Each structure stands twice: as C-alpha cells, then as structure tokens.
Length: 338
Image (cartoon, rainbow, N blue to C red):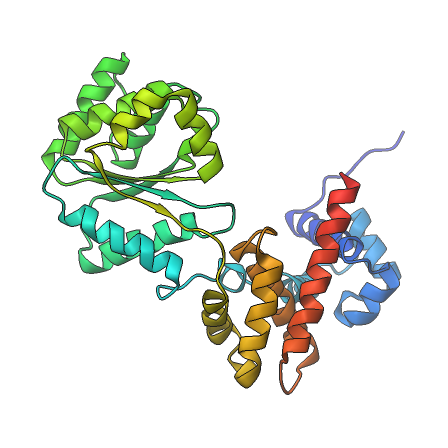
C-alpha cells in the first residue's frame, strides 16, 4: 500500500512555479528543452521534471531560482499595468467631465462614460479617484463593480455601496437598507464610480434615480456602449430619466488614437527616439478592434521582456512590429483552440 506524503509549502510552491513555467512555454510554442536552454537557472530536465512532480531535492535552492526566472518571464504588476497616463485624450475627457460633475450645484449629478473593451474606462476611473484623494485625502469617493451576480437586485447594489462606506449591512429589508444609504449619503459629499453598469437591470437603475433625487450623492457610470444601448432600448423610460436633467455629460471614448499610443511609447519605451511616430502608427492600427489599450499593454510587455533578456542597444519600430505580430499570432492561436 502506498501513502502520499503531503508536500511542504516550499515544495508546493516550487511545483506550482514549474507548472506555470511549463504552461507558459507551451503557450509561447517553446519545447521544454528550449525553455531550459533559455533559462539555465531552472536546471536540467531531471530537475525540472522532479519539480513538476513535487519530488525535487534541495527545494529551497531551486525555489529561489524558479522564483527569479518567473519574475523575468512574468514581471511585476507595475510593468503589466494598463499603460494609461493623465495626458491621454481618453483620460483628459473623463477628468474634464468629472470636474464639471464635482462643481455641479444642480440636479445634474451623473456622468456616463462609454468605452469599448480596453479603451481605459476602469483606468480612467482609478485616475479620477487618485487625483481626488491627492487633493483631499479624506474625500468620500468609492469605486464598485456591478456584478452579473447582482442581476436586477437593488439589494445587492445597495449592500455593495454600504460596504464601500464601511457600514455593516444588518438591515432586514431593502427599504431599510436604502434609507440607511440615503442617510449616510446626506451626511457628507459622496461620489460613487460604478463600473460595468451594463450588467444591472431596470430596478437598479430606478434605485440610482432615487439616490440622485434624495441625496447629494454624485455618480459616474462606466459602461460598454453597445451593451448600454441594449439596456436603454429595453428600458427607455427609466434610462431616459437618468439621462435627462440628472446628466452632466455622456462621454464616449471612441477609438484608439495614434497620438495616445505615441504618449504611451514615450513613457514606456523612451529609447525609440525618432521611430516612435512610425511605431505608434503601426501599433494603433493593430490595436484597434484587438483590445485597444489592453493590446498595446501586452505588446509592450513582450518588448520589455525581450529587452530584459537580450539587452539590445536600441529598440526600433521594427522590433515593435515583430512583437506586435507575435501577439496577434498568439491571439489567433488561442481563438482557434476554443
């Protein structure tokens, strides 16, 4: 009879890292031999296979090496974060309308920001929060994300808002919860940024209308344009009441622009020098419809990993094009495998 001896936490982490590295190699069309040749710190095939099986000796030594290689292949969150900056046209548009929202003294207390996937809605929202807190660290501004799990249940939305305000949700009824939220929102100026709002239903929209009517709360809705239009068509009267005299502005982020990609390249790849304009043109064209700024981010991650590994003297527009094509190839391959 055989017994399975539980792995130590270090051995478990080593096995997980080895599995992740094997998966990464497969996704990037590298054989195990090519992976091990490219990253000698992983040891030979014997060590790698032992790590995969959770039977590696000298775990602490190899764990350190595997962590190092993983950090090179998958850099920090700072490197892979959405490459958005305050001077991008999309961010400026959102910031400008948010300033109008903050200054509004009328019933207009709502901004709707529409943008296709990867156009930076969520990141623009984060920049708004950061700017407001930088100006006033005690500002009451919160971001919540509408979940498909909310469905058309205002209770779920109200509970998420109360939680963001640091208030325990102990009320027994929706009416009691709503009264509690209204009281809290009238105690001090409150701003809520609600992401993925196209996932809610008409009852949640009516609840938002009530909050705008009965409190000083100001709201920014972040949404996908087509999905929000579908919501409008199905609930025209209710959405119309929100987008009537309660609306400060409705911002559509449009499509990705070469000038914005050029700004990103200037910040992330300053070594491009005179070739940034050509690289921005090529990258913007490829990014449009392929994830927009998210596609730009992934291409830059590829370029920066390549830089870390090969240490080139310069990065050229040709290098950008090469990694752009590699990213497109990977995406096509993943689509075909679905």
